Image (cartoon, rainbow over all chains, first blue to last red; front, side, top):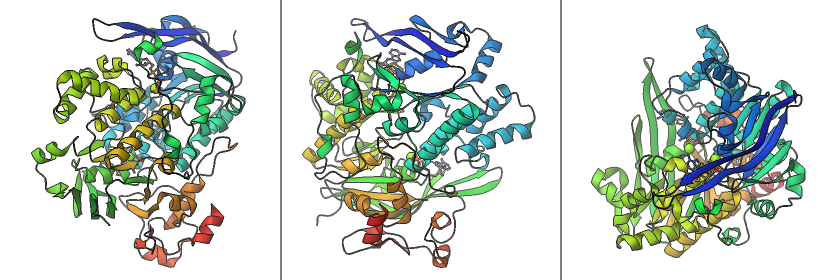
Length: 288
Length: 335
Ligand SMILES: Nc1ncnc2c1ncn2[C@@H]1O[C@H](COP(=O)(O)OP(=O)(O)OP(=O)(O)O)[C@@H](O)[C@H]1O
Ligand SMILES: Nc1ncnc2c1ncn2[C@@H]1O[C@H](COP(=O)(O)OP(=O)(O)OP(=O)(O)O)[C@@H](O)[C@H]1O
Ligand SMILES: [Mg+2]
Ligand SMILES: [Mg+2]
C-alpha cells in the first residue's frame, strides 16, 4: 500500500463522562474507516450530527488524541507512534489543522501574527524576517486579508470571520499535503465563503493538497467535495461519492439531514419551517 | 404603535488604539439608528468585519477598551421601566443581565468556566433568577436542555468534554432558561448540524412567541434569517445600509450590497459556487469617502464618491442608504 496518503483503519475512541457515581463509557468515534490516495488529491468531507465525533476523528488524524482501537497511518506511518520533536515537526509540515472555533483555538494573550511567523519559521523553514513576513502576507492575501491589517493584533481585536481566515492562512504557510479543516468557514458570510471554498478547490487542483473538510454546510459540501462521510453518534452511517450521497441519501439519518436544510427564502408562514421534530436527546447514554 | 423596547439613536462606537506609535481609529459603528418592538425578532446580517459584533456589544454594554462610544444612545424600555444602558452602574447592569437582557457572545464559550461542571455554571448564573428550590430548578434546567437535544448528563460534564456544538447549545440554554425579555445573540448556531439547528431555532421561536420577548440576532446564515426574523438589517462597513421586513429584503433588495448578498446564497444542489464580491472589504481605519460601498458598486456615480447617502425611509417603512437604489421591479428582475 505505498500509494496511500492516509489510512483510517477501524478507529474508535472511548470516553467516559458523568459524576463519580454514574460514570458512563461511550464511543465518541465508533469503528470508522476510510482512506485517501496519495496520487489523487481530493476533498473528503465529513458532515453529521453535532457531537457525533467529527472533531475527535480530526484530532486522532492529527495525532493529538490516540485511538482506543484501530489505527491511523499517514504515508504508511502510524500517527500515534510519532515521537520526538523532529518527527513531530516533520509530520506537522505535511499535515496542518484548522481548528473549530477560532475564539477557542487562539491563545487570547498572544498576538495572531506570532502564529503565522512561528509557522513560517518552523514549518516552512524560513529564516529572514522579510521572507517570513512575505510568506505570512501571501497566505493572508489568499483569504482576503493582509499582514498590514493583522499585524500586532490580539485575537479579540479581530472579527470572527477575520480570525477564522487567519487560522486558514496559517495552515497554508507550510504547503501541507493534507489539510484537516474543522468547520473552517462557519463564521464567514456567503460571498467570502464562496471565495474561500474556491481557494480550497484550487489547493486541491493546482497544488495537489488533500483536504478533510468538516462542515455543517451541505450546499458548499455538495459542490466542492469528491467524497462525503456522514456521521451520527460516533458511527459512519453513509459514505460515497458526495453528489450521489446528497442527491439520493440512503440511510434514514442522511435523509433527515438533507430534509432539514433550511432554504434561504422566506416561508409563507413565519416560523413555519421551524416546528420542532420529535426530539432525540443526545449525550453520554445515547452512545452507550 | 407601542413604544419600542430598544431604541438605538445615532450610535457611534470606534476602537481607538495606538500601535507602533501610530494613532488608529477603527470606525466599526458609525451613526447607526434602529428600533426593535416588543415581540419582534430583528436579524442583523452583513459582510464579515462590517461591525455587527461591535454594534451589539455596544447595545449590550459589553464595552471594553479600546472600544469607545463617541455619540448616540441606547435606550431600553421594559414595560415602562426605562433606562439608558450606558448610564447604568455595574451593579444595576448585573441586576438586569440574564433575567431581562441576555447576551450570547460570538464564539463564546467564555461564560463556561473550564474548571466547573456545567451544572455549577447553571447554578451560578440562573438559580437566583428562577426562584425555586434547587431540585426543582434542576428539573427546569433538564427539561430546557432536552429541548436543545441535550441529555441531562451534560450537566455533569466539564466544558472540554463536550463537542463545539454541545457547548454552543449549553450557552443558548443559559441565556434562555430565565426567559429574558430581550435576547441578544451573536452567531449562536454556527456549530450546529441542520437537524439540531432547526430544533434550537424552533425552541427560540416558541419561547419568544410565548413570552412576547424580543430578539436581536446576528448570523451569516441567511436561511436562518429568512426563517426566523421579522425584520432584517444589513450592515456594510460600520453602517446599516438597508433595513426592512425580512420578506421584502429577500424578495426585493434595494441596496446593491444586499442584492449581491441575496444573489450569492448557495442552494443545496448548486453545481458551482456563486461569485464572491469583487474587491476587498474596506479598511475601517481609513474608509472610502462618500458611500463606503462605492469602490465595489456597479452603480457608483460621482455623487456616491463624494457624499454619504442617508438611510431614507419609504412609505412602507423600508430603509435604504443609496443614491441609486433598485426600484422594486429592477430588484425583482435581478433576484
Ligand atoms: N475529552 C473528552 N472527554 C469526554 N468526552 C468527550 C471528550 N471530547 C469529546 N467528547 C465527547 O465525544 C463526543 C463527540 O465529540 P466531538 O467533539 O468529536 O463531536 P463533533 O462531531 O465534532 O460535534 P460538533 O459538530 O458539535 O463540533 C461528544 O459526545 C463529546 O461530549
Ligand atoms: N478590540 C479591537 N481593537 C481594534 N479593532 C477591532 C477590535 N475588535 C474588532 N475590531 C475591528 O472592528 C471591525 C468590526 O469588527 P466586528 O467584530 O464588529 O465585525 P463583525 O461584523 O462582527 O464581523 P464577523 O462577521 O466577521 O464576526 C473589524 O475590522 C475588526 O478588526
Ligand atoms: Mg466539532
Ligand atoms: Mg462578529
